[in-house]
Amino acid sequence: MGRKRAPGNEWMPKGVFFRPSGYYWKPGGTTENLAPANASKAEVWLAYEKVVEGRKKLLTFQQLWKKFLNSADYADLSPRTQKDYLAHEKYLLAVFGDAEAKAIKPEHVRRYMDARGKKSRVQANHEHSSMSRVYRWGYQRGYVPGNPCVGVDKFPKPQRDRYITDEEYIAIFTHATPAVKAAMEIAYLCAARVSDVLKMNWNQILDKGIFIQQGKTGIKQIKAWTERLSAAVDICREWGQDGPVIRTMYGERYSYKGFNEAWRKARNAASEELGRPLDCTFHDLKAKGISDYEGSGRDKQKFSGHKTESQVLVYDRKVKISPTLNKKMR
Image 1 (cartoon, helix red, strand yellow):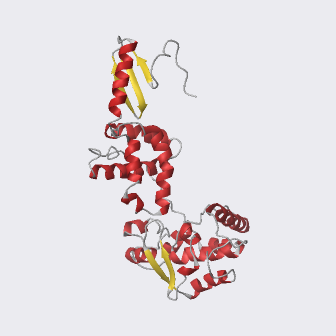
Image 2 (cartoon, helix red, strand yellow; image 1 turned 30 degrees about the vertical axis):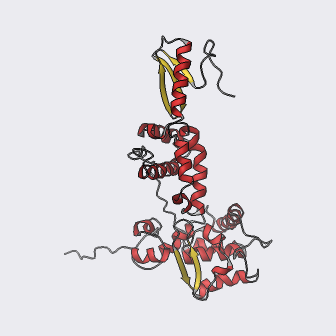
Image 3 (spheres, rainbow, N blue to C red; image 1 turned 30 degrees about the horizontal axis):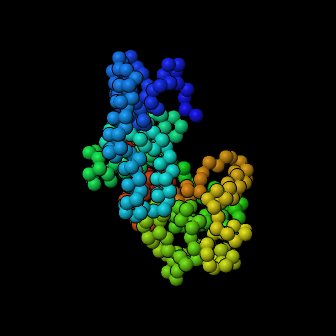
């Protein structure tokens, strides 16, 4: 149920409210000035119906959003990214859906970010990116005159610098189930994301190595065999060599939630063994692989499959040993 009208205002159309300066309508995102404060009820209704009729010919943000979702650009996105857009849709359309797309201004986006950021700054940033991309797509096709997200700062992203030491890795590995052990090794040795490891099928196990197409970037690589990588895959061979490589004890593909629970059990057991809390995530194994890989930033980029060298440097977390001045006192 909507908010109850103040006594005497029951006659107003839905979304219309009165202020000393006049009558206003707020369908979502923007506010329309309908009539002066001294307007009659009939005049308010007439102004309301005129604006509503006019808006039927306008492009709302929801319509712009739907156009993008039906576009080839959206179809070309990875399944994971498409899923992200559908998740962001719920929050963005609730606020901006009925607003005219070209009427949304940077200050509206800023207010949305500030309000959304109180609950989750990370999600606010993601939704900002999705909204900006939709506007950029619409601008290039003449649907809107500009992008209101441009110039609206995202929240600073805290830089994660957690590096899993060899001692911690071995402790977790020791307490892990065979499936988690195999997944750990593949993620670490191939700098692979957990989603790419869990969706891996046996038809990706080739003579030259493991074929991986990163779900996030779309980059395709064949990770060449090493003795250690072969041993990791051998763990999985006894479960059968068709369908998913990493399986549950029932022979099914792991869900992310189910696998994360198995990882957490191994990590918690390792924490007890080491006598200190471990706050590392499975995704930190990718960072460990990149950090431990010997070579330049460009070498690490080729190894990890990132599109740019700057992207891969975010994962290079191992503290480097630097030279010191070796000068004798006179």
